[in-house]
Length: 354
Ligand SMILES: Cc1cc2nc3c(=O)[nH]c(=O)nc-3n(C[C@H](O)[C@H](O)[C@H](O)COP(=O)(O)OP(=O)(O)OC[C@H]3O[C@@H](n4cnc5c(N)ncnc54)[C@H](O)[C@@H]3O)c2cc1C
Image (cartoon, rainbow, N blue to C red; front, side, top):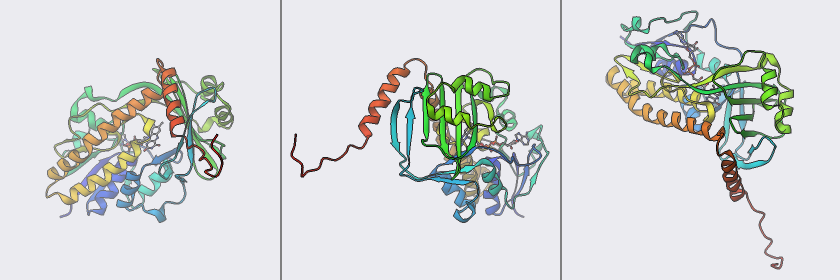
């Protein structure tokens, strides 16, 4: 008889896991509390490890068309102060792929049966299943059932607004201010992605454009011109949280993946990428191991320390980008790095030295 798993949550982590297990011969049941997959959402940056994991679970180049965008390595991204002074101009380094959340979810969901409108109130009731995958996000009930109420998601004391506007812009990059940042990235040939964060202990009531103008409307022209193009009904707003440190991602036959295991601050753009890598790794671990227990131990070994480092790195990146005290020194240091790495025009050897 084949293996079977119950997956709680049809987000990026749950669906990546479903695909990976299915490819290795498992039958999967995916339970999702929402009525359908979301049809709107912003762009997610996909790092090379995530692109490889996507290929491993059958989302290869030909299926990556609608909703995908690509920034060539030659593209430069900038770091500004709110007054518009450029602190750093960085070459892209490697090509970056971007995908809209709905397009990614639709691709991952292809050929996967999802049982919608089904909220798992008590994950303990699934203990009879051969394998239970808690892919239920930042506020995971599965995590709390495994480790207790103390292991709830922690607020980062910051909130984000984000969205997409029509058309391209002249420059991409981030603007850093004490306690706030504003980011602009491409979102395809004729769209631009933006995100904005401030330190705040609570989320704001809508409408949101007024808060965005209030916080960022006096920043440099690039930010102001982008804000002018934001449509109120496209703005997403939420608080930022991270997962607590876990001693393991597994208990018995239950395993956590994605944000349930390692929700991280968004400042390195890695959460969705790591959820995909989790799914591909869990499928491979199960295929390699001789028992579910051994497969889960292998997954925990491969993923826990690595993702913990990313939770910490993402946290530090947010602290650095939005630091209050010492931001002047930080800007001076970043500016110096920018000047050091800036390519210098080469001297024409045929001209006499001055
Ligand atoms: C501002 C911001 C920008 C980001 N940018 C990037 C980026 O550029 N690149 C990147 O890689 N990542 C990015 N991320 C992170 C990324 O969005 C998340 O890490 C990723 O969506 C996590 O996927 P998940 O499947 O683990 O969780 P989720 O997306 O939260 O999915 C969990 C699913 O489980 C369902 N569920 C929850 N509880 C239950 C229950 N009891 N029963 C049934 N169903 C349940 C939910 O409805 C949901 O569908 C960003 C995050 C933020 C906040």
